[in-house]
Length: 120
Image (cartoon, rainbow, N blue to C red; front, side, top):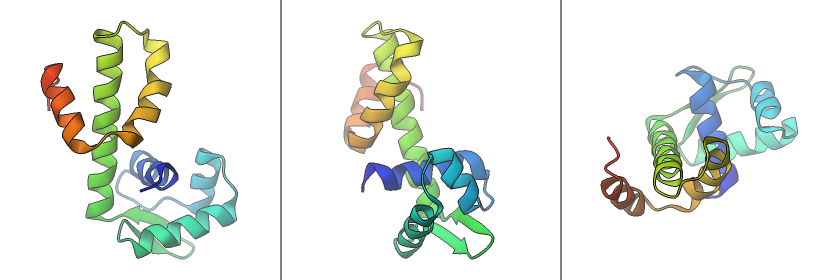
């Protein structure tokens, strides 16, 4: 899955709190054009990651929630590893973790979590 799609799923998870997030909110939050949001939301709905209702916005399906939680977990693991094992500063780790979360298979994240003794 593309980083862009994952960013949408993660954004909806973090800003929807289980409720629908409007296309306008997504566009502003991700700094993309509203037509791009509409197109992506429809793609995510076809993939079974988002439930979309016109004029109400999109909310995550259980599959979408799982994807978002996996992304967030990978992000947190990378932040911890970078800060505590490679001595990056707190200010440096977020952007690096944002990049790494998208290219990290779950198996690698699990092994890294075990290596750094990161709690579940």
